[in-house]
Image (cartoon, rainbow, N blue to C red; front, side):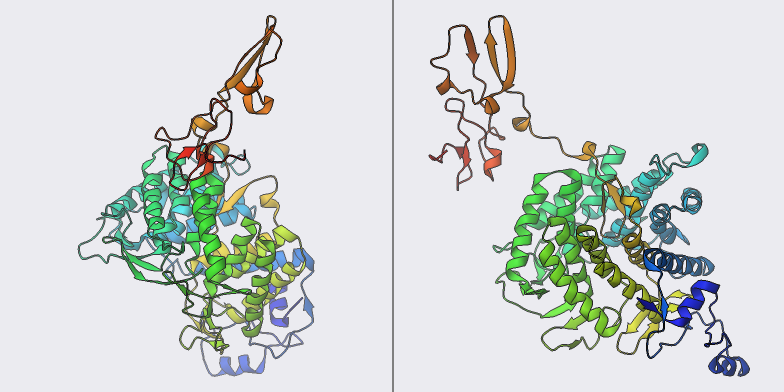
Length: 574
């Protein structure tokens, strides 16, 4: 895999000057300097886009890893020099620092990790008069604080000298408390916008998105597990359940809705409501609640039935399932990564290859590409350094260990360096057809795009550990203590007692197949008390699936859930 000569010079010499073949300043640079033009333009590119690749090569996995490391630290240094001016949200630097703390820890840079944690502890506050988006603050700010707290208390990265005393968790809990007024609606669906100091303001818009209501459970649930305060998870779960209840008969959900009336505003939908599907699956993995799996499984089947067309996914009307828009959006590129978690590797691979072909066609992935016209969207031609394709590449490599995905990563690194790298960091691309830049670097470029590309070549962070990455790339651990307790009906407390002489043994009635019908004909010395009965999960015998029904006490047969939703001996073949 090649990178261009200017990038090789940058990596080897750490300079931001464009060089010629002999290391001399180019004529264009001389002319600019002679004319008195400023050479400190933050959007000045490292080098012009060359007509063809040079012969400078990444030296395998380590070379690619170093290239990503250079990208991250170059962009980080630029943001620090700019005093966080372009990416601040609450107090200067707050957003940037705690979005990056788990990145530093994953790269093994414990000094920077400790420095950032302590800076946040001393400087960050949410007691500000600022109107913020609940969804974005949840996945970026709350998720960053919760994840960084977990990493700060991890035995491998625990801060020395007792400097850390759960300050980040305290900040996260304070932020979570400020979120709660947004959920005070008749439907339980939260407002999309909230003032951190004053709560929901008068005349606030009641319109929100499916992702905004359905992508809160991971961060809010983790916060409840860590603080012992169940309210955060409770409000997020109530919103998710309400949202799911609004699905159509096809198990599809729209795009936007009203939090007061609970009515849909936009019926056309697709996998672009990405984090909703993602959080259903990941919530099941982290919290072990079958309810999340039931939702996800139904939603996933509906997506494959109504949205999928070969390797592509179009949008459809949630009410009829009929196609509405045939387009690829950059957010769709997360889908193969989610399919890997489900185990649908073949579908993930086919879609990922098509998405990457679009990347190769333009050099980056445009925000919207019209599949039915085979052309860019006339207005949404930008690339804001999004991470979704890098994320899916990372997951596919983890699942298959196919080196082709590492080549994909190298090509993405190459494109980022030549099209987006500037003196002031990495700039978003305004128009992928001309590679015109805009003066903005999103925080997700550092916390996600760089992170997934780095992990593609160095996954030692994941060795012998189980993590789930949130939609903003923050790792949350999979802990048995976080899993919901099994209902009593599924806990093996009903036993069969088999007594021979003076010796009694206890065993599962099901595994020993000891039922009343099989107790006849046994020797008188064996006294058997049957305990095969397992009660139904609900005392009213209502059910949604067979798993919620128990075992009959007289026949030891499994009870089934009827179409009407009641447990009983409905099947006569068992």
